[in-house]
Each structure stands twice: as structure tokens, then as C-alpha cells.
Image (tube, rainbow, N blue to C red):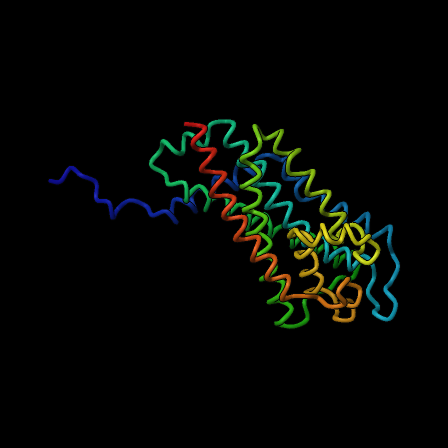
Length: 274
């Protein structure tokens, strides 16, 4: 009789990661205050902005509420990825969860798969909620053809990946969940203003446009507008077009940059904790 455990019988990284994802989801939805804020804040801002600015863009038949719906749909998934991971990983680090995982027979890749499961589920739920609010209150419509659905999907995926990696990176600079909340919310709120989410891009000064164009928020919001609004609204963008090629390049570039920053900061942080 063999006394050694067959390595083939051990669960794989993906299996462990998905199990970890189930744990992450349970922990997230148990924090009711965090859940309420995460999902209600973008929806509340959408309702307020769409109700205050009720004019229609001349020659398009598109209302301000519909434009805000598309932009906030993009901003909402950034909240569920960048903010959630920035705060969540910082909390795991401060309460010793990460240190315990490093000493357990659980690969860190499984931990990150669990975080990915949480972000994807939360981001999809946020997107559905914001689209539902837009459809109910501002007559927002879903993409009318396969091309627009494809745009919605790839912008969602690239935006979620890029902002998740940046959230993981910024979590390394926070001492605890409380400081992480301040560190992540400040740039998030600021970028919403300079990225054409709260204020149309055409009324922003040039230096704000230049700052906003450097970060993913502007391009995610613009990509969602391209997917959810008619082509006549492209003229309202600073370049007069949706710039989908540029959107893909910028978001793809931030995925690469975010991955490099994430690997570097996590290695440095792990060395300090030893």
C-alpha cells in the first residue's frame, strides 16, 4: 500500500482559484455597506446627472441622459475593478491573509484567479444595473448590431483587465483598507471629471483633455458611448470620431503597463513582509 499522496489527485490551480472566487464573492456580498456603495454610487450619479441635464443633442435625437448612461456604464466597471481590488487586496495584506496564503499549499495564482472571478461577476452586475437604469429612465437602448456588441465586449474586457491590474498595483502603497480607500477614490473621482464622464469632453479645457487621454477611464467611457450611441454622436467627441483603434491601443497598453507594475510592486512588497 502506498503512503504517498498521488499528485494527480490534487486539485489544479484553476479549481482552487474558482473555489477561492466563491469565497471572495461570499465575503464581498456579506459586507452590505460595501455592496450598497459599490453598486448604488454610479447609479445614483447617473440618475442625478441625467435628471439635471435633460437637453437633447441637436440633429441626433440623443438626450444627455443617454450619453451619461453610456459613460457611467464605463465608469461603473472601473469602480468594481480598480476600487474593489485596491481596497480588497490592501485589506488582505493588513489582516495577514496574504501572508497566511504564502505559507499555505495554495499558489498565489489561485488567489488572483479568485479576485478575477469577483471582479468579473461584480463588473457584469454593475453594467447590467446601469444599463437597466438608463433604459428605464432615459430610453437608453442596447447595441443594435453584432459590431456594437463586439465593441461593448472588448472594451469591457480590456477596461476591466487594465483597471484591475492598476488596482492591484495601488494596493501595494496602502497600509490598510482605510488608506486604500483614500488612495483609490481620489484619482478615480478626479479622472471622472477630466475624462468626459461627469462633464462632456467638448466643454473641457485642453489641458484637462490631455490629462484624461493618458488614462483608461476616458477610453472606456468613450468605447461604451461608441457601442451604445448612434454614430451621429461621434461628432461630439474631441476628435470627431469614436477612435476605436486608439481606444484598443491605449487600453491594451495599460494592460501591459499594469501587469508590469503589478508584478514589480507585489515582489517588492513580499520582500518587505518577510
